[in-house]
Image (cartoon, rainbow, N blue to C red; front, side, top):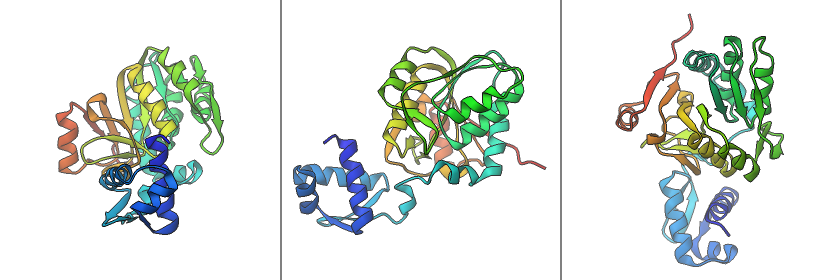
Length: 260
């Protein structure tokens, strides 16, 4: 079993049973106790469970373990995400090529971007593609092909990642599930994390769009360190420690203005 699959199964078991033991996990996962201890240490550092003597219990904040469906998330912090979308869209020039991943904030971003002229869009999100198609001045729209996941209206898998590797884009606009205290970008879904990493590597400039609920929030899968990011667009300034970590990595922080 791959480490990522093992971690996901451990999180599921902790959620179901509230408390698990090293011996029990080792037997269930058909691995050594030392491997389980390392896994529990890693997951504890990420804030996804609480390591105790001989095992683990649920984290203090179980919301960090999983993400709610996209439709529900789209309704959360709607005003903040729309402000971020307006601020982010203003950073791009008609004619730019932009890789855009799937996320609630990137959908709002696409809606705003569609009002601003023709862009070349490459995305794995059918909703992003739909928003850009509605532009009176739309440019080329490339929908990446792969395995379809209807819950989030996105395409994922190795085919998507391989197609992204063939692209050299001006920009990537990435939504993430969390930004840790050291500035690390994170996601709850391994396949989404792979897509985001590929987009980051295939773009000359990278902009992360994330509302303030994502700041100081851990998720299971690492996307990249802050040094890979050029800009963060958010609705509220990060706290001093996170702001320092981002600025030391060369990240420009753009705080969206409040609407009157």
